Image (cartoon, rainbow, N blue to C red; front, top):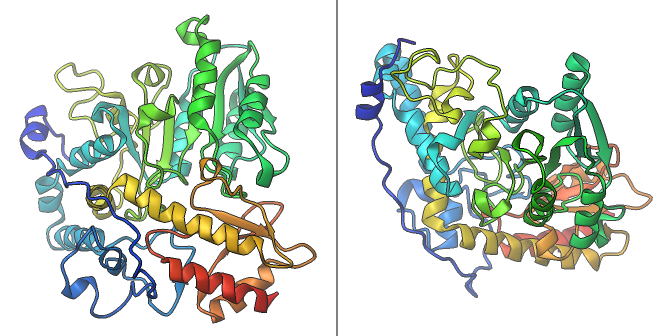
Length: 441
């Protein structure tokens, strides 16, 4: 890619049009099937963010299935798909011309992500996934001699492996702690208390996950961050404990801004609950936190090389990996943020929480099923996990699909049956799932 000047970026990066946030209630007539893949859906109608049927009609998901795994590798809504198609066609017809014409689109995406997070675009790096973001953070953080990282037994492979690889390279000490024994009865006090007990004088990084994909437990991140602030008060900046969060199963779902979480880094893919393009993600960091991280990839995001004082050198730009990649996916990411902004964070959270609570209550009444995820919405988000004592959860995936229900299995040593109600499902879908499962046990 040719070198871009500061003027190129300033002239080619347009301001994003803000979409009005519209609150959505759960109407009493919301008892229809998903209908998300109907032929007469979004392709022939205007998008009404105040109408859940219209929202679901934007997803090109087949209406033959109830999609309780839509969040795993999301099917983007039509405005996002249309943008991907436009950029892909432009790149196919005139690659160099498209790269030149849309040179500022990455900054537009960064601005959209920052607006969603209530942050400064300078604090946002763009990635291809949560895994890439975790690797950038845990590989790039500066840690002094004798420093340790504290993580938990509940984190996903990407966190554990990123930290293991760092240990292999430089001997960084990594220690795992357990935040709860029984996910179904976990409490905020228990989690925060155990978290604080795990912090020592040598701890410089706390690596945690906002919502655990293996149990559905949502950590009280803000309370954990507040507790760390008490510890950090008496520490020099270089010795502060940085709270780093894998936020992928809360991002796009929980109605908070970055500052509300009181963490230092928030890492997330945007192709799950945000329903963004495949192969996209973000890393947000506080300026003080970015100051303790060294970029590990050459970046194409900055208009000038690091040794050129003429161009802006924001942490988010410099920590965005460069290279030629799937530009049509990244450039379309701002449409996903616009889609969510039009519906409204609070409305999305309320609709998802409503269905998740209904599902947990219904599953808890089924003989032969043990609810794993806390019922309390303050300790859970959209993921709902259940245990089948004495049974094989893997054996239920095919029968459920034959009954029109898409489910997944947690990718951990202890496998649970997992469901994810979302804005792509309905309360009627939840009722159908609860009615169907007993017949398959």
